[in-house]
Image (cartoon, helix red, strand yellow):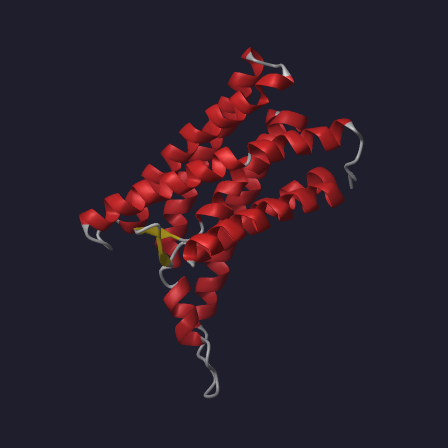
Length: 229
């Protein structure tokens, strides 16, 4: 059941990215970055079983941000992709501060949400801190690596190469840094190792699956089908 839901979420996620790009152009891609960052950091606190392994939820949504920065790098240039990374970082900081401030409010007698919010967001500073650090390092590498490969293989026929060569290494960096900082001491070592490998494997699958979508995004752009706002 989880595997089918995972595939469905993958399709929905890529669909949302294409829709927001088609409707709003570069502005839409910038808007998706904080959506992905916030949703992924909420989902990541949930552990799920996938193909007999333990994995954190949120891998699909988070990994989609690499597709967005790659589209920005490919079509609008390195600086546009760097701007998206900075927007994502700011959104994580803002969410963490605002939601933890909300926890300090004394709930009304009829309130039913406080404990649920605490279960998610009281753990968020560590998760968000780990995510911020991993996000900045991995996304900065992704932007740099995409530009590196694009300069050496500028032809569109090598789009798959620069997309995957930058994303796969960046996601390895992200999974390593995030898993250690977010979950060291929280889960036993065996679970930590399993979370790392399953997290990277799932991100790798998402990264490989996003290749047709970057081709489609570029095709839409060259055919003047993107509504820039």
